[in-house]
Image (cartoon, rainbow, N blue to C red; front, side, top):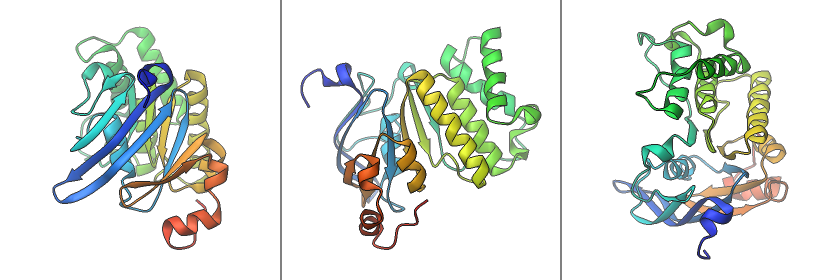
Length: 254
């Protein structure tokens, strides 16, 4: 990378990243640059390293070797709290104990607390933003219900609202439509697209939905066995013959 490229053009720069969990190598020398404002799709078979790539960006994936720079900050050995507040993260498949005494509104409010600081009380404007996003993800009638009493798909909606109320500069999505029916998937993806455009966010989305990725993403990276297998425009890569080779089988098309 040329000197200064991180601050001038890119929200994320990863160079020769190696990540391992005990004896399992999850990333094998991955290098990637993501321009500010880009929507990047990340696709590949299970175990390809897709989720691990997201953890490197939010500072939860410690590098054995290599370097990662996010919003001008070196996160190779972790992510400072001030930077993490600028990154929204929606994990795949929340697992919440139904006995947990925390409501949907409380969960979404955590996003606002992450933005203003845990020790500061959210302002009226923050509370209005919380209520706005609860409505936008379709959970207005469930705002006071314990989060553990919601279905998996409804919990995913709450997780998305929590991330977006944070007003992040980078949004990380790990299979954000898990557990949703087709109509709900389209609704949530359209919400993400609106937020991406409104805020000019840099969005990274792990997905198996090839057709939707082709319609939404500016660019895609295809991963396999912990490596970047290919990268380029979505329309060029998300074709049946390419996906057949990636998955060593027929692409499911998403």
